[in-house]
Image (cartoon, rainbow, N blue to C red):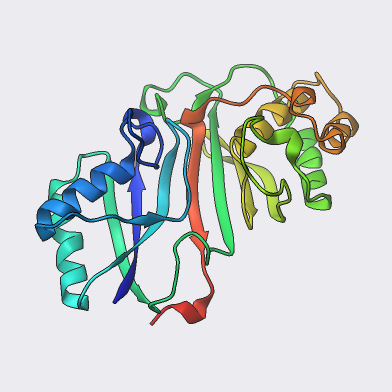
Length: 247
């Protein structure tokens, strides 16, 4: 039987989600714990990668088990063994052909900025002291919904077959002491959200206009966009699937 596990992690101590030969990824820690609990080598399949230092409140991966009781027991036992900065949240049974990566229809990210020194936001939000026009940043964010090709915001060395993404929402919102950028799309390119945020911060500081931001999208050239915002402000917050895959 196939199950989707939802997992949260603080990415500070990890080189992203993906396991790699010379660096520690969250996926590796989960596989090690699962292997110990089940007493056999196990591999899991995630919904997608996150960059080094990026956090997740709702990453998803799939794994096959013999029954539902075993899945719940695995979640409980694994949580007791996983590091303090990684937590399994829940598990759902899905159709056997379901795939955590390929069946995802929408993904959502948030980028967190604090404008005043906050010891509780260290490594969890970008401390940014320059004055910002949220109104202009939101006007520029709306432009993203009019386009599909976002090569301007993609890492240069990447092996994707297309730079096209369908963005469903993109906006900034002040949430108590934190300024949060919300973005939701069917897929994201490597480094895309951080590059968009960095460029929108240029708009907010009046370094470029809203019209300039739209021109940057059209150029399809990463060099025309702003610098990438730091990884520690970024969160993967949601991965959505068709309802009919759940049992």
